[in-house]
Image 1: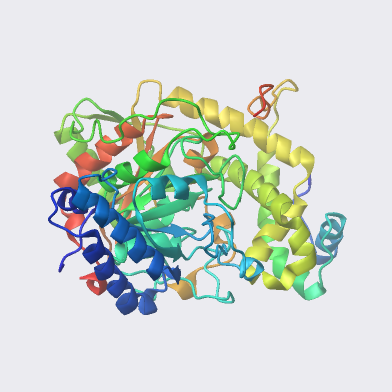
Image 2: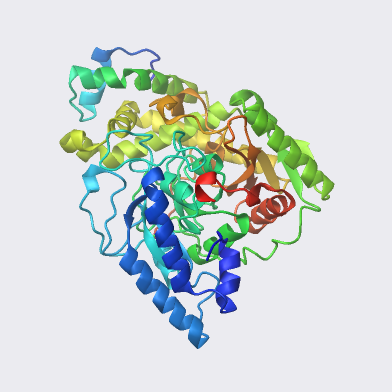
Length: 63
Length: 463
């Protein structure tokens, strides 16, 4: 997300872009969790060298 | 029958023809009828199937053809494990009428070992949405005090084992769902090394963090269950093709010579544990040292780092799995599940990749920290089970779980009861081993369990 604050309107827009069109009441219900999750996303954005790839994600020998 | 048995003891008596599998099964079916209306561990009791399985086991017993230590032993499965011809719901209205045509690999393996299938067990909805109050079936209460939570998501298995309704069962663990309920219900539960037990036929939560594993009254019983569950399954891309060791092979070696690292900051500052939990860990350290283990303190990244990384992956994975049904069937999900998963829609591709990169760093950190250690020790839960009415929707994001490091890294980890807290409910430690070193994890847990009194105490409801 790259942002650490959110309100209901912004949350509704993001969820709609993700395919979820929710009522204002439903969005309101999600806001506390969304705020906590944004904090986690920010925490995960530590600086890393460009070449730091998640090498555990692909194996050429597929099964 | 008048007493609760462990799997190991029931197995010995069945092998010696001192115990009839039909009698054992009938006795536990009667307990389910008597006690389950108070704790709601079962979503479905498969009585006819159980008696048929028991009669078949008894025939093998009489002919000298027992399949092994699980033959004739009553177990049940968390209701996210597919069972052929038997409803599998994930405790969700969405799958209320879902009847799989094939068994999950772990279910098939346990059936092949001769177990008696008693039924399907409650779970937090799709293994993440609990404790919920708006599902089609109630969620379990803790047998030590049914007004308190079992934790989740393998809640029914933990409650059923603690109440003595079954001798063991299956659980799944994506962020602590075997070890959490095992800790709060005072039983023993192992999350195996990633890839050791196949997830074929397991309804998914998060593809690279999901683990299937055993839950039972003792570490020895978990080892017996794991022996049947473990093994290569080519249909699971993560399943490892390597020999399965004898999980009871090191059970009686004691703790002498083990090298144990205590990650004190996990349970003292990152997620501060209760006085009873700390006392249990300190007494376990003293016990292991008295048996000849060496114990030292270890520092890792904070629990929040592990938790952040794990939940960015879990929530993105779960959103990907459930997105079509969230769009079409929002009201069929429980409120807590759909809210927890819907926020996964906020996670961008770049956030997900960043979490994967961070995961690799944390895996390397843990590997390095354990170079000269056999086990890590911390709490399995921070304290006793809270009251059900005090559980919160977003608690899992507010305070980092003590269990996520082993999911993120794939390392094996076990929850072991270390006593009781101020509210007379169980507390527990967690032992984390190196990959595929389950025999060492069981060895330490068994050394502790046989040297302490906690395996002798059952919930009053179960007595």
